[in-house]
Length: 227
Image (tube, rainbow, N blue to C red; front, side, top):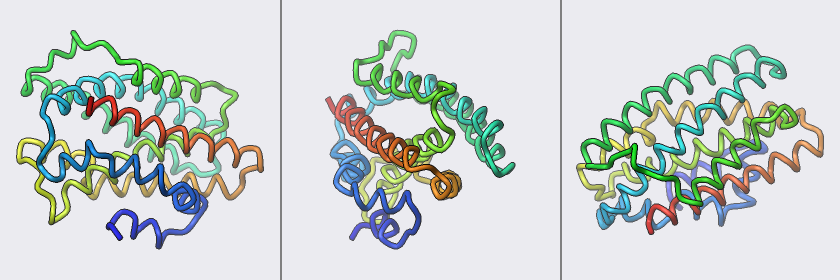
């Protein structure tokens, strides 16, 4: 069993239970051929450039979503430390946008000329749908955790000892695959699991459905990037 899935098998809590239940789509999102092509060194660099431009646009839409989760935490959270976790995430996103600009310049990707593809637009609309006041904090934090988890698990896989990740892509993989980002994802998971323990049956249904939607959108995003 691969390292990420082995950790999953040993984990506890509602989120881990759901990932085991939906293992096929979770694996499709975190071990996608696009990611595996980075890991084995066979990636078409045009695909990487496509991902770079589209993900930059996505991150710009992701910032207000994370901000909306922070606002929900202010009104609904039962733990003051939640806010600190989200603030650290927002600070990291500021650095992330700067990194995208630097990296795109290195690869000759003109960000101002990039138009969002339909898959990207659909994902961003999904994020917008989670920002409304009618969406419970528990549902929103489940989505945030799942989005970040997919990148952490995917790019950490490209940093493992047996990987042949191209040197020029190592910084990209390190950005999301590093242990610090892994700790951030675990902090999000703890918040989600704490909230899910107290959730109503309706909230649980919504949160699980939202997790599935995130995983499906992530698979489609990788598909788009791969071309």
